[in-house]
Image (tube, rainbow, N blue to C red; front, top):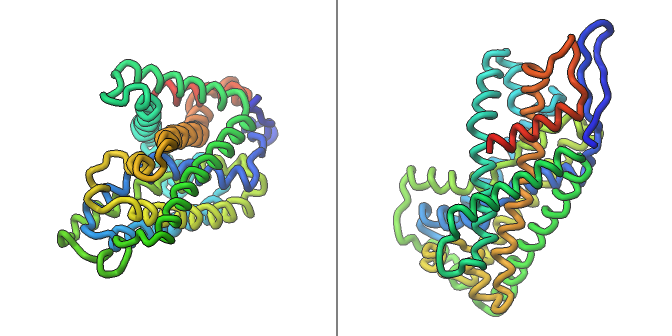
Length: 356
């Protein structure tokens, strides 16, 4: 069970200390698993559309990884300096005071996180149902019911055991990386066959439109969406084993790895599709699979579905810590002490699931 130990000042209210069960591998899996969702399978279209060339699109992807790396380094410093779970809320409260933290907490708890969780769950259900309804949009009710089942299942897992949740995260993160590795390997095979016309300098920077500053900003926004989630490890700082060492290490390992994978995945896409074909695709990875994988093209929609499933687990695992902070500081005070850790974590996760 998710549990912890009580600690606090003599005569004062006790604070629950969650067990430190997240090692370096699981920490990397949390970062990678939260970053790699549906974005890399869908966002390449938006980046290319606003840049107007293959070469500039690839540069935007590298810059997106660089910005994520800079932000994560700042968060590594914050996580070591302020070793509290809760991420943004803990840092804003520590620096700007309780009112700013309170406003951030409630905007995140009621708007930002539940809506994002619901969107990811709907993306998962749509990709799962796509093979069942190949010639039409999946039924509205079927998509919602499957999303709800997914959220309830992962809420139960996260409520039952931190170890189970981190194991699921490890497994699905490995699955995501294997799926993207398959795309990259197939792309390199295409390059060795000589199918890299779109990647030559003369073609890569052959602009079919002149991007404005606004277009570049929109392209960067699309790329940044695929990198979102780099800050989520800071939400579980108190559960990290030796956070002063493992928090920076996990960031140094994860962000460069994701940037490398994203860049080479996009290169692989352009070995199979022209810019026009990529822009006409609603799911780039699925189109890539249909063109190059033949009978095994079903692997791509399944990979996207599993990727989003792992993303839901990681999102629920980390964002529930913000709910836990909320319950600790505002609701679960009884007789000058906090309710036991298990009850607090169960309520926090179920509260997050109900909002989504």
